[in-house]
Each structure stands twice: as structure tokens, then as C-alpha cells.
Image 1: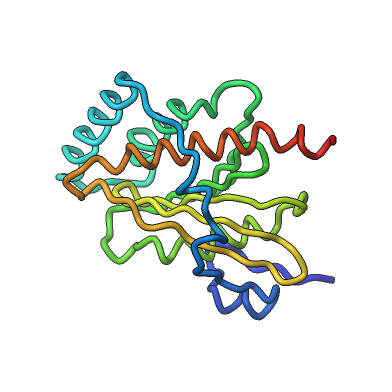
Image 2: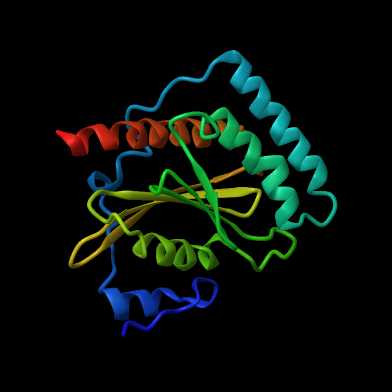
Length: 198
């Protein structure tokens, strides 16, 4: 019988030892966060500017995971179209799963020691447990002010790659590329079932 590890407690070493998981840092492996990104409409940019202002204001106080989900994540998922057909959002204790292909992991931002690196193994553990491992899977980890995208290619030797880190603390509004990437993932997820039927 296979042993399971609680995703919250998993370490990258555990995933490497159990699944042979390998990190790939070459650019061609994970181009989905770089190529064919849709342009944003003026209204979307205005909404993202307001979202950033709201978050930076709230950052003056302790920011709990529930606030991050409400103020940052939920509006982003809405703007990306993930609350509309054909997408379905499922929630688990520590992660949201969209269409069985995109895992969204939020960690609390109230303590600076909770960096994105703590959420990467957690997201990968959920992704490795996907029941349909016949196509690349995507994830995003965020702590409110920072976002990191993950690609996992399942197989006998599963491989993963990471995007650059996007931060709301940068002078530019990094929510622009974050939304563009989410929309790109949405396009890939919407066409994936059609590709499988061919």
C-alpha cells in the first residue's frame, strides 16, 4: 500500500525520493508563462491597479490567508474567467483546483518567514496526486504579495519548472503579467479536453 505524506508537511526531498521528481531550469521546458499571453483591456488594468492599491493598504496591518484569498485571489480568478463555463473550481483544505489542471496554493502572508518556497512542495504534492497525469499540469503559489507559477510534466520521471517571481511590492504592477499568465493557462485548459478527443 502506498504511503501518503500530508501536503502541508511535505519537503522537496520527500518528493524527489518518492517520485524521482526533477527540476528543469531550461527555458524551453516552461514557456507557457512567457509565450502567447493575451493582452489586457483597459478595464482589466484599472481593476488590477485598484486591487494592488487595496492590498498595499491592507498590508499595513496583519494580512491573514482569508484576506489574501478575498482581496487578491478571488478577483484575479474572476478576471481570468475561472468562475465561468467551462471551468469548475474545487476547494480543498490548502488548495484550490481549477478544472483538474491548475492548483492554486495560498500561504499566510502575516509572517515574513512564510515565503513561497514553503508552498512549492505542497503544490507539487497535490499536482503529483492528479488522477489524470497524461498532460502537463500547472500551479500557482502566492502569499498575497508574491506569485510563482509551476509546470509539472508527469511521467515515470516527473519534471517541474518554475517561473520568475512576481511581486506587488515592485514599482510596476506585476498583477498585469500574473493575469495574462492565468488567462493563458485558462486557454490551455479549455482546449486540452478537445485535444484529448482527437
